[in-house]
Length: 145
Image 1: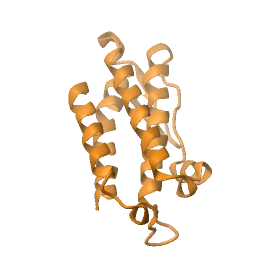
Image 2: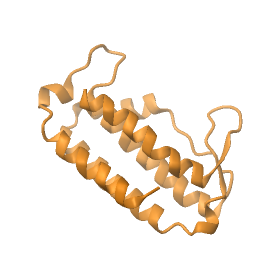
Image 3: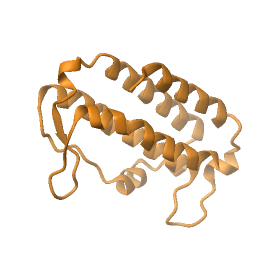
Image 4: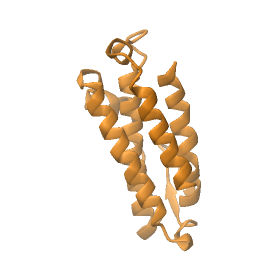
């Protein structure tokens, strides 16, 4: 992961977020769909879990680090939190991800982690790192709509 590119993505979206109204942050098209606040909250949850993957995998391989995204969003109650607070949480979690990744020794990138909910799905730390940005961008596109 290119840290400069990653930080640029964060900063670019922080500017985009400034143009989203409170009404748009709160809008839910249905009870089963996430609002923009909940999508960003999901990205915070993803960051929390990926920080754990990025750190733990360096010293202990094949740990199962997975989470139930719908439960996390509901349990964190993002819909009731001011969107500015969620934005700040997202910002700082992702700056921390950039910091952690920048300090991962190259020789640990082939260590493995289990990201499965049911059957084992073992992937390398390098895979998890490289998979993070596409996931992030996918959800950020949903916020920009």
